[in-house]
Image (cartoon, rainbow, N blue to C red; front, side, top):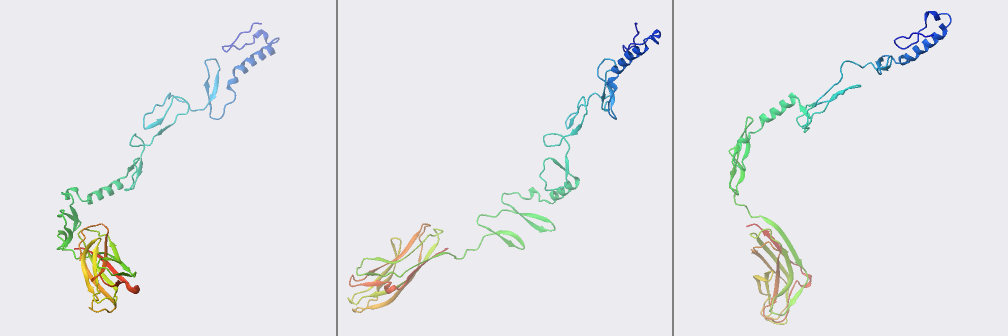
Length: 320
């Protein structure tokens, strides 16, 4: 039997085969149809058929997202796009280096470089700027600005060297300061109860000393000395004690001459010699003050700080 075929190549039964070959022809025909329509099986809700190839009845199920748009092309600041599948688009964030979407900002104190000010924000900044003092108000290096009332300001030109800012007529002004009063800058105290004796006319340390470091070479040093425990022995009628004040190795004041001298060979005990001396050391280096003593007549013995008597020295730095 030569059976005719359809456009799809299916073998068709002939009229003469209706009795003898019909079952077999239908089997052949049915199998061919079943094979060709296999691609139409399955799929899910919402899917549609799409041609898989140019072969007859070659289909496949695909999502229903097809249309007549073949490509989505984007440029900055839009991102995404494509030519197939599910195409999405977005917009990039704006920065100082690229265009994009910018979030609004309602703060006048923000330092962000990626947000934009809202009108209320701009208005606040404008009001602040409008209330600011114009730079043109000041014209000279060192000028000052002060309020004159009614939200107004004016300029006070810079003063002269050594002038001070004061108030005159209710407004600030520059003026020459009055001469400064003498001030005490620092005080140093020293003392000793260590006794010393001498039977020589050569001067020796009494053990009373103190050191001060002036803060200015133009300042004075007031020296207060109380040399106690002065004694002379009864060994000689010409016996007496001399006292000097020294700055370092420099003799600056002879403040006790032949103390306790009586012209008689008797012992005298417990005398005190004092001095207040104004010195100008003209330095800012550490400066030592001390007292020295000697026997006037180079005979017998004289004593200072005797029997634990406490001698004191006070150094006071003062301004001119």
